[in-house]
Image (cartoon, rainbow, N blue to C red; front, side, top):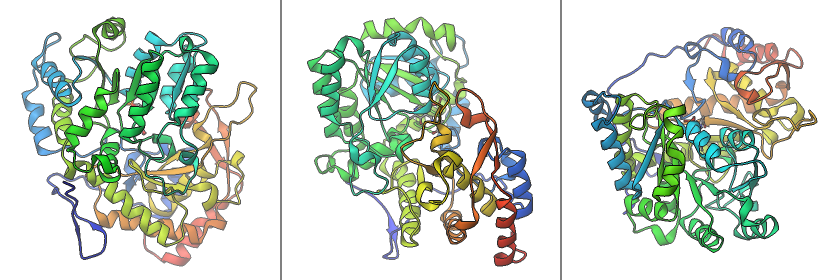
Length: 482
Ligand code: F0G
């Protein structure tokens, strides 16, 4: 049974946890925020956390741990090989996913490295609902290409579709007909599709993909990093699953896959990663790479303390109260911003609230990175650190031209159990002010542009002194307040 708590007739979400440990935060004056942004090359990745009030960069590795997770960290069995900590994690994964084999990795992209090295060869084509940055890089590094087959609705910023992360089954069949199954090492589905707004796929869609994979003897790989949100949405939005428990949905979903890999910086609310595998021969193909790249087979580069926290975190992920918290806060934020006419991705997804920078800053051309400019502006306006998810996060075409992304989004991640509702309200307030003053915001240009994953380390500058004007307006409207 759905067990979601609200109060006061309004759809105000109620936290089903209490705060036990806190971290002091600072809110720098706006002038200092402008200085910090300039020093960071207008790249929110390069800000120092001490200068940030609300860190909405990501939900990766920054989710709040529970008392049970922290308690479990004390019983970690620290041995290089054969630790009981590993057995506990492996057993927990077996209980949740029903798969017999598990390879630990130090985080999600390390699992992608192992998968790509094992299965992808020059000329391989990997169909997927949508790419994630590190996934695509590992596949292309090994000579493969990716094909994004998300349903057309998935790329519409605003929509009523409950499962915008679904794959278009016809497109998948056509792709296999055109290129032949031999070229396809596996089909990849990403839960809670990160780059298009944390949008879920349905269990029904995964079943249909499984049927196509069976027809052509293809492996089905699930990226389960954002599975917690996806599970919540399946339970809430998929009529056939309404009466199933989260555990039942998880088991059924996992039974359709051959491999499930994940970032435990997200799934399990700790830090690490891993690959669960159904068949022994598939496991054996990957196994030897773990000691080479990660660490011995019973820790894979993770600290045993974190492994204990993941084990408990995975168990807690089967609790609807736990997995609903992020999506409910995000939905509150999306609804409140929508009411104010601010363009956001709908329906609300998991991971965070996604602002449509293409419309918010419609006067900025894509070549001047509207989502990057919005990220810089929001930090200056509120000390809020978001992440650009648009053209800056793309790689240039081989001829050096820009590859414009399908969407220009500013992602404001809502890490699980971290923020209070008044902090979310503060973010809404500052975004609203910025929207009212959006015409002051202009674009950015690169001053230093790395060749791969340029969004991590690239540096940019404003095309004009628009940021000083923004600070002046802030002072005019807010007086001496921060
Ligand atoms: N797959 C998905 C869907 C992810 O969201 C991430 C990470 C990874 C793989 C890689 O995992 O970071 O543990 O190596 N996403 C982070 C983010 C970085 O901020 O969205 P990792």
